[in-house]
Amino acid sequence: MKDDWVLVSKATEFVAEEMGVALKRSAISPNIRERMDHSCAVLSRAGEIVAQAEHIPVHLGSFHVGTARLLRWLEEKAMPLADKDMIVVNDPYISGTHLNDLMILAPIMFGGRTVAYVVNKAHIVDVGGPAPGSLNPEARILQDEGLVLPPTRLVKRSKLDAEVIRLIQANFKDPETALGDINAQIAANRMGISRMIRLFERFGRRAVLEGWQASIDHTRRSVQRDLSKVTPGQYRAIDFIEVRGTFVPIRVRLNLSARGVEADFSGSAAQIEAPLNAVFGVTYSATAFAVRCIVSSTIPTNGGFYGCVKVRAPHGSIVNPDPPAPVSGGNVETSQRIADVVLRAMSRALGDRIPAASAGTMMNVMLGGRDLSGLFWAYYETVGGGSGARSNGDGISGVQTNMTNTLNTPIEVAEMEYPLFYTEYRLRPRSGGLGRFHGGDGIIRSFRVRAPTSLSILSDRFLKGPWGREGGKAGTPGRISILRGKRRFVKPSKFVVELREGDEVVLETPGGGGFGKVP
Image (tube, rainbow, N blue to C red):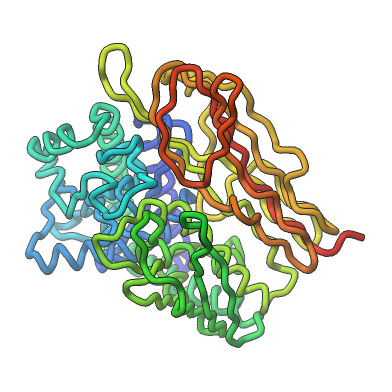
């Protein structure tokens, strides 16, 4: 049939989506089971993305970088994958995000040879290191954030490698939950392989591969068609991430043309001894996200799209650090600022198509301690905020924005599984920036701990709120307080603290920026 490539493309996208459903339903941790902090994709034999599910933006764009680096690493180390093998890696300088994201890749064999790959990433709540949840605000080197896994054969001929499992059990502070989530990742890949083999059997190897190439070519032409409507030229912007009470700059120069988008981050700050460095995969992912926002939502996101997005980020910078710089917060916080600064540069070309800045933080909350039996528990969540106002309407209140697409953790689930009692969960009134259209409001989410607990926070936009556009005011900055009896302790955007039983933590996320002058 003339349009078989469309059927092949849509079927492959559905396989990626179904992998995500399998992963979510099989997972143990609320972070994946409830919040859906995972992503799945299908790759060609050459490692090009042919389909991805609509999961987490920071994961998805990083696949373009991380899988290419992983396959190159395997080739250089002469480490071929056999049928029913799976490779696991969390080294951010290969996988492209941070240590908590375990990436598992498996080959699809058909006709006795590798024809494609399935891959997924899932945020494992704790991968070791001194801080609960492993996103250590006080990290100075990568090893302060947890166990670093180079590419390792996790599954050999369909069997879990016992040595790798023992390594995980010896280093992850909550190994049983982690192993449950890892098994869910393995199950998702196995489902993806099964579905893809059925697709090859139905259409034949040649038709599937040609269908993928046709879809990639169609995507590239569609992206370039949309970009041809944008005024070409170079556009610059600067934004800042907060580090120890100071503003650290991120600069970008965008070259927009009908061929694609080139982003040059020269002039951004040098890498720092703090966990706010963003590895290249994160910088690429955040840039690609911003570009994705300005092209049609009906265009598939595959290698054709990624081929239109080029990124230059100087080595040794905060947007492309050299190891062993710590990077956990770069994935969750600096990624937000990279997206903001690219969108800000785009606003020079696209005018009122670009909204004001959104909350600009994932408000990462990491909790941990020991239960009555002496076992360690770890909990991770992010809290939404306000989206930026648009040229034709107010921003949205209480949503996840930019580089995260996760859900919230239901209070009932958190209270059932951890020693927490939630005292408040509501919108933060009047926190959106004023303007002709107001920014969306942030969130107030507070809880009391029912046992001694370690708390780590990685967040941002505390010193200065998200910027407005066209005369609109900035959103209200974030704020965190700890209530101990009658005393209130106001905290910075990044810290670690030991909580006593009965302490209450009050999280207030930023509102989005306003758009236009107040009438």
